[in-house]
Image 1 (cartoon, rainbow, N blue to C red):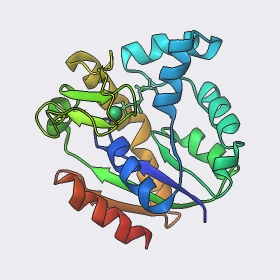
Image 2 (tube, helix red, strand yellow; image 1 turned 90 degrees about the vertical axis):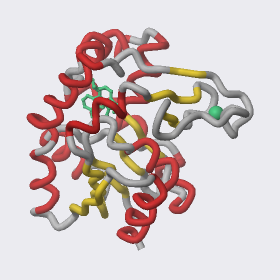
Image 3 (cartoon, rainbow, N blue to C red; image 1 turned 180 degrees about the horizontal axis):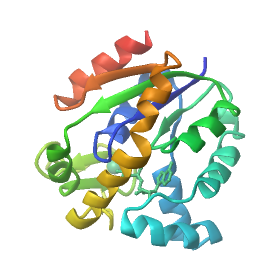
Image 4 (cartoon, rainbow, N blue to C red; image 1 turned 180 degrees about the vertical axis):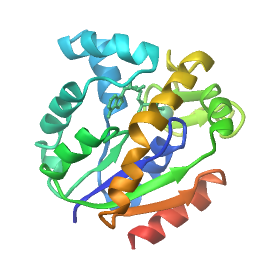
Length: 208
Ligand code: ADP
Ligand code: ZN
């Protein structure tokens, strides 16, 4: 196989779809955001460097991100490819990635800016299993998460002020990647402003 890139603005639903696609393709999700948050939590040197950027909603420097990715794709579970979520986010990251692994599909999830803020500002994840919920659009069931040990987790950068900075970073630094991948024949996009299951169906159709 090869690797897949999930592309789209913050709050587009990349993580939600990554989990659903993983069940079908077996490709592990590689989320640079999750890796960075783990590093921040551990207090590692990478975490200490990344934290100030993340808290502001700015992108973490490319060399930090590429260091994490190079290490991650050495793991055994990445042998048949991975599903990148939140990476690459700049042209230099995409260029570096093209020398590390073959990308077969870039799947863009399109969501208009005005929907992003409301989506991000109600976001909850289960700290035990990582499943993503939303207060309004995908609430945690009354019996809790299906993993059986629901722990409510909310991200510190999921607030209105930081979301606007993250959106700006997306438009200025990340969205040029759409044309970069389009010109290489790898770019596919789906409307992300619909039911979660309908989006998954479209994404799986593109992969099949
Ligand atoms: P979202 O896509 O919802 O903004 P992520 O969890 O993907 O959230 O990323 C959170 C933060 O981590 C970003 O705002 C940024 O600071 C940092 N980050 C994650 N991935 C990258 C990347 N590939 N390049 C630079 N910074 C990144
Ligand atoms: Zn759970």
